[in-house]
Image: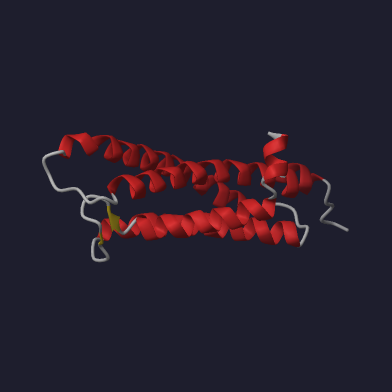
Length: 160
C-alpha cells in the first residue's frame, strides 16, 4: 500500500478523482443502448447529486492538507457519508458489468457500435473511482490524522 500511496500522491489522487467524477457525471446521462444523452430523466440526476458529497470531501481533504489542519467532525461526517456512497459506487459498477454482459442477449436488435467501447470505459472509470476513493481515505488518515476527538479534547483545559 505504501508503494501505491507514493505512486498516487494526494494531489494526483485529488486531480484524478475530480476527472473521473466529472466523466462519470457526464456518462450518467448517457444511454448505452441508444447512444443518446437523456437530460430529462430524473434518475440520471441521482448520481451527480451523490457525487457532491465526494466533491465536498475532496475539497475538505485538500484544504486540511494545504493548511496543515487536523480533522474535524464535519470532515468525519463527510467521510462517513462517503462510505455509504462507496457502496452505491460498487452497485453502479456491477450494474454496468451486467449491462455489458447483456450484450449477447440483444443480438437480434440494433445496438450502436459505441456500446462496448463506451460501456468498457464507464466500467473502468467506476473501478478507478473505487480505487481512488480508497487511496483518498488512506491519504486522509496519513496526512490529516484520525478522528479521535476525545483524546484531543482531553488535552484542552477549558478553565485556562
